[in-house]
Image: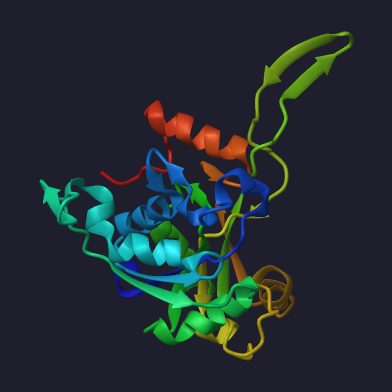
Length: 264
């Protein structure tokens, strides 16, 4: 089992209501870090480990994502537009990407498990990567796949320590001994996305049922039956849930301190 033989299925259909300032006109995976949609950052992480085939589950404002990939060259090049004829000329060129991107309409109201089930027909192999379209990390995808293969289970999730949304203070008496702004939480793990799933984990979901949630239905069921492994990731992980998260990620990118940029 090798990463370059597999698809990465990316959930990109949610509304992103907690980032309403940015998602009124576009889906959250199209919110930008350094001028590039976070969706493309996620895809570049996988490509670094050999993945070339992507299946993107569309929903809310999916046409924005369709337009971006259909017109990828135009979105990323300098252009000259002749307004008298409406002719467009590309100035220079954009380095081509050796990716195949399958864009799947999975329904505006569908839950995450149902989205993956509807996209399953485009997954060639028995095993595939799956993740959310709003989180970046320096996860070692090859090590994740190795953990999954050795487990022999139907699913593997990447467990991460979430960053605290508040500054942490260490108090001794009436003094503050240390203060850390938004530290990584040392205790407790959460599902950080970057999963590996066997098709059998979701094949039981009815194609016409939009209510099946990966987090409420699929993963708990796998865990209950002893079919869910874990890959612990102690490195960087950050979701883009709020405007503050978006600002933080853009500041990291602008400052050249983006830990998730594992590609050249």
